[in-house]
Length: 340
Image (cartoon, rainbow, N blue to C red; front, top):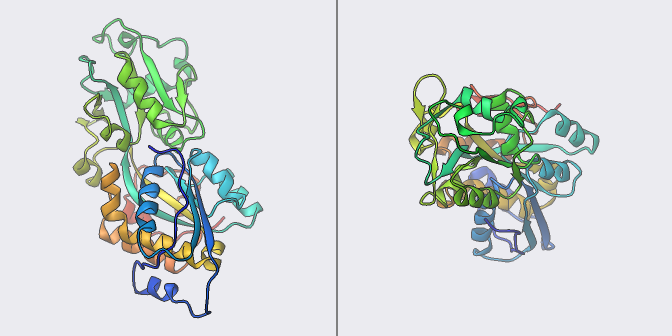
């Protein structure tokens, strides 16, 4: 994981015929423009890799492209205040953020760019956890567990009498929001006596160094360290399921499979040709870049539908302010976005 994006330059590379029309410069010479991205540390590696590829092709008019991370919540705050052009997000925009965007007259285009298998991980020397049920995860992470569930054998009697040391994304993280809603049943409902960090690399290092550790983060951070830690299969009532490509694509890894997003400021996409071109490049190249950084690409149909959404400037969200753990991504992409 990097720390901060570098200044990048412009390229015209289109996703489809409609985006090709956008890339044409009918008005003469364009002035250099900047593009700013902030938000999810989970989505950060994808957008950073896309930006680096964008830099290499016919640099002309991009004055600066910065890619930073402050967590999904922090990124949405800046985005809805008009301070950045794109918000990286590891969960859908919520009601409070929708209201903030409304207050500042910011209209957004919601674009899924990848799948993530939110991964629960333990130290490589942990030889007692073969799986965890959703109920056991709830027992571990619910607010009532604070100061009470402090040892592994309190989770399951067959586990050893050893300390249970927990590592969690920070409260501004979309991963934190998604996990708490999926496992505990309410966003932000989590015990607080844990190690929090917005930097997923710090969480990974905590698990690598502590044989009694348990934590969670996006699958890319597990893939970077798979020789130093172990992913825990999750049992949602049928059988234990590991966070693999096939299980995610077949919607078996529930409820911890999630789409990852970029949200684009619609007005700025009209004003800045370079922003349009960057998003078009993103959608055209995501399928090959996403797996390179450890995430799971969408299908060609998914990217096509996202491209249509972007070309048509369909503002709003299909989620209504909260995550949906039941619908498939195809079903969500075919729903009409609304701006509330």
